[in-house]
Image 1: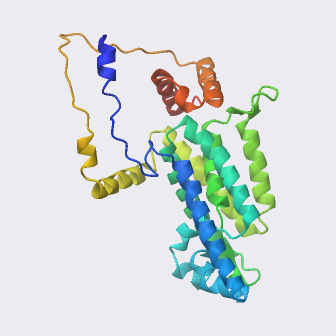
Image 2: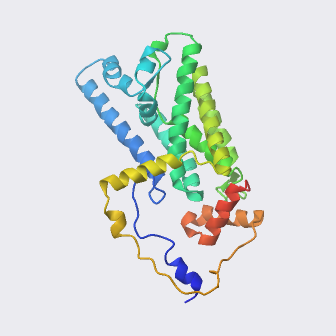
Image 3: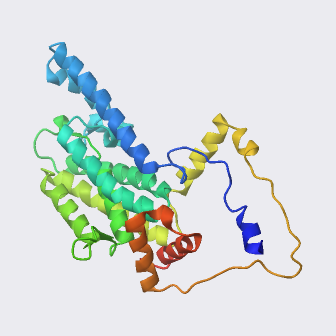
Length: 309
């Protein structure tokens, strides 16, 4: 057994911390699950109001306005928690399904190429910043009765995730069986055009722009070594140890050391070329991220840090 094999035995711990921000979990699936759970609860409550022959306005005033983001009025400012809840809530079935499909398409690409832990922070940052932009826009663009405006749905945070994915790998090809594939940026333009044309008002368009900018800034900082979502990961990992303090200790592998004299452990390096990067991206698109070797994953990480992707 070579020295590289000996060291390789201890690269991955056997304990896996399963929370929705952990890179070993499935962050995208968790996001979809949360959105589906909120939608089903609201649909059940709405059905209950209808069955009781209550007016639809009672459902909005008693339930929806406590979760939806209010416009730039005293109502929007008095319920700051709605900056988080609005992006997980929806009562329109078609809009909900469409948003979930777009989130899965772009989120799955980002999750396959990079640590899926990045999806949750981008989703939250995009939703919060876009929500603030929407509240400000409805306040300064005073046209009509803004006290009746509410913001719901995953559209804005999905714009942030889609933009971050596209800025990260704009040349990534999807549906390669169609004339060699379609570049990701083309799909992003189509998605953005649909989001803008269906927005309905200037405030919504401003919020879409804010979500787009959030995705771009996140990727820009990430490629320069600034991970804006690291604190979220650290916080959830710390919180997990509060609920299960003994698990990590019981499953921590025992460290072994070997006498190697003055020899250094064997390391294999490869030249980073655009051809190699394209081959790795094609492999991911065909077989998934899990099919990559450790060397290919390391090359992909170096390429992202050096703006090669």
